[in-house]
Image (cartoon, rainbow, N blue to C red; front, side, top):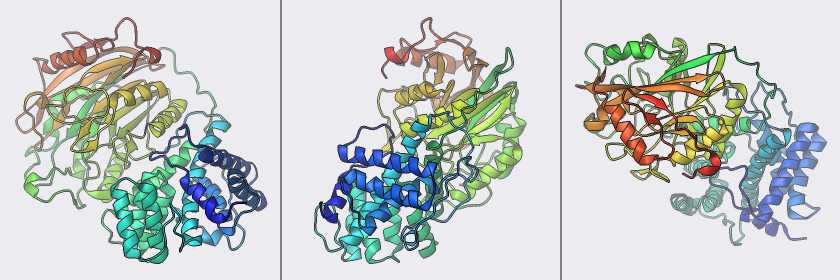
Length: 602
């Protein structure tokens, strides 16, 4: 039998995906751990007795390492793998798992305090094997983290490769931060764990360790560390946002690991249809900096197009910034150059009056004034009866004409449903498709400005940020079950494509953006996109209703239909084979032979 240090190094050598991917091919050692983790979770779900739980956890490590003996630390790691897979199960789960630890063992496993986090109960019907496979993957990720921590504890003076030697906490911290900055998250975890071991009360070590865990997709571990930071240093900048992000992401991982009700939905009413009107970025005025509120009230910004918004079964906009009267921002150094938005809470009434039914809060301005304003926005929308999607796992559900519609909004950050985490994004769309008649995906992505009119192949970078591979993302969510895909974020209109018979609008442009936006040229053009879907989500018809902004950002219909000719030109250039047919009056139709998954490549 290999000594424990060798076992730990084997575990440490198993690569962790930077973004959890439940179907990624892995090395043999990790594959064995994956299988063991799956078996561990299966056993627990069948029988949550203490004896079976302990045996399952130990078997998880024994089987992977090929040995019949485990140290107490490895036993703890095995138990932690099962605990991580079960601790975040929502309270309303139909298959709760009760975890009972042997005396003296549970105390050694840090468990974050139970937080209230309600995630909409949507999800795709998965087989028990698929659900347990995902749960096993989460268990393995957690057990690897526990094994790394055990390595620090058992071999504090070791110098073996891959293990940090516990010594000066300042040195561990410096090396850990440097590793994190160079995107070496495994080394960062080892060094920062050593810092925590050497100085448990150092909040800075725990803060950075939480970020290192987040890179590995170990959100439950991030939550544990940041919860400790709150106890040690409650004034840590950005702490509440980090805690919310970790809590939501951990809950989403647990949600996607659970089986859902596979009972077929009742058929929709015969002949049922859904007529949608959607617009891009909307910000009716901001209190920061001063002087950027419309003098006649926020309603004046969209008064001329209000009849167009109201005339639909379902109206959607991207809400670019919070609705809030308090909060602080750390985004701006100079008020004159500040691009942080905060609209008064009262401006929500103008959305309701214009017939807006559902909004996206998944964008780069929803968190401009922190968690306080993010929560205030959600509360305001709830009070108005406007559905929303944005934070990880959130799905907006609306009933119209006997149809249950689900909207999932994505952005290129972990604080929202993450556009760049494709496995999780598609899993969430699949779950939503299983419980809704029609699924709409909204995304905020792509580069920005007048030079960002085209949809490139591959990733779009903007000031060093990965703004997504939008062709790959949109096709993937359609394959996962989306019936309509609505894009926004570039602040210009972009091309439209049909894929698998589903319409993809890559950007609807600036719709109503008062005071703080460059509205020159194409940036002043927008649209209200009308799409009619049948009861199965099939495209029936669509058209572009052209708009423009004048003055400081007052939206009006555009009789010249400039955005129609622009989108038609971009569509011809970017998608010559799959682009939408766009008539002079803005009417949309697919080409005669819809593109299929097997015949296209982004």
